[in-house]
Image 1: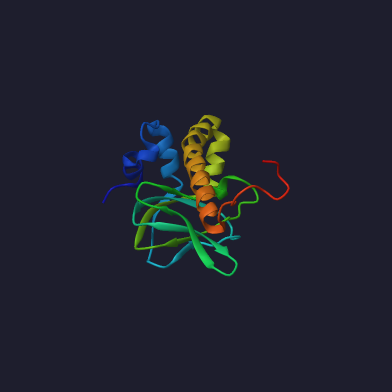
Image 2 (image 1 turned 45 degrees about the vertical axis):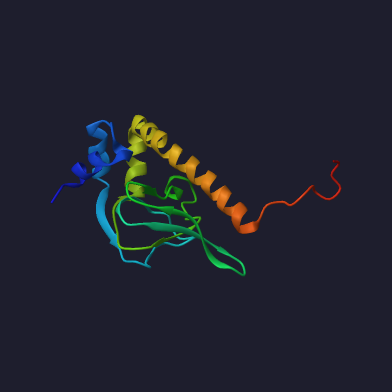
Length: 161
């Protein structure tokens, strides 16, 4: 069985990262699994970890009145789940549900934040890897919300043509 450090080094998210920092992350990590249909976290709950998916798919969902849960984004292999652990008040803004058996590496958020505070260069490297993930998810969420709520049809009332 591979060690966590080896598994991290193989992941695209950690590709090219200094082995010393991979070791730091490995010290905060462990293998986790979730069965199909199981909630990984719920909106409003404490954001105390993040995941790197090794196998399976995860749906990020939000509740829409009179429609119920709506999938905003589907996350798959080699993708990161969660960034709410980075910013106070450390609360999840969506639900995350396993669509099938999910195997992942889970990271203890408090441990990662502490290591980043101790080594700001590590924090910078982590943020430079997370920002593209956050940016692409925000764009996908925006597009999904346009689909959920519809787009404006025609000019606004009172607008000049």
